[in-house]
Image (cartoon, rainbow, N blue to C red; front, side, top):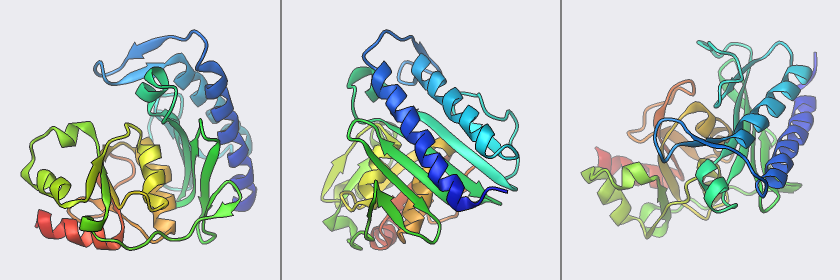
Length: 257
């Protein structure tokens, strides 16, 4: 059976291949479709990338399950037993279409429910953020240090559009307490900024493919990844997630509670 270390090396190559495919195709003609509403887009490149990633995963880890955003993985995944790969072929599709920037390819491996491998590729900048449980987190070949444990008043905060406009009093107070508010439109890019210390926290409604890779990398660096009220999260479901330094997490819980 292939080792986790070998899977790690091959998965890095798969993610980079998908990133190169997206980079090469974004200047060509491709189809853009609407999924749930006009802000929720999918392109033929999303689907092509997902099939590319899934086909490669089937070759290197044939007994695994695959949960992927556009539906080319396993249809019914009800438990996290064994190897489960979670795939986001293009995270930030709106940015891919409108900006040709600020989008990512994301992949994670969970083993018996625990995050073991995680990858976020910032496609335009060619930076692959990757980690293996117990071995730290890297950007390309350089190891990342744990970010400073700053509090909310010392930190920039990222929060998604829906939450920012929701009018929720607690979320409004959290945003006002932070030193500044940011919104990038890509969970992967926002997760990168938390694990590198550029943001103190990120709050968003996240689906499994939005969350899986960033959770693995953030927890490996000692960051908090939980629901906003401090409860544990279920990676198979949609969650209102807080990714933050420990001090920001404490500050936000005081506001929520």
